[in-house]
Length: 48
Image 1 (tube, one colour):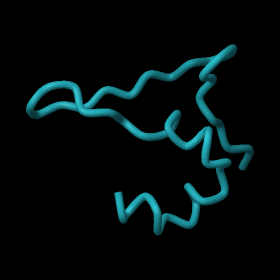
Image 2 (image 1 turned 120 degrees about the vertical axis):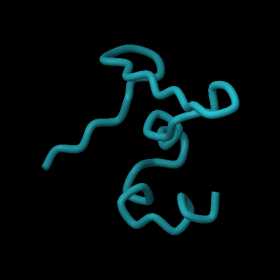
Image 3 (image 1 turned 135 degrees about the vertical axis):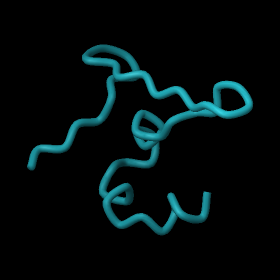
Image 4 (image 1 turned 180 degrees about the horizontal axis):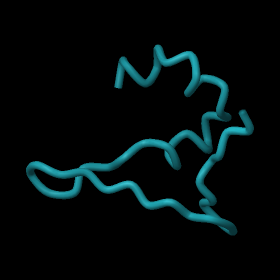
């Protein structure tokens, strides 16, 4: 979305990994966001 494209924090994450931080539609009124702790598709974590 335009909001994601303009997000300065999301821009810090390589483009191919950003999807791990964005919930996906899962039905009419819900979204799903899976946290993958390691391996293929591992969710990006920020070291703050």
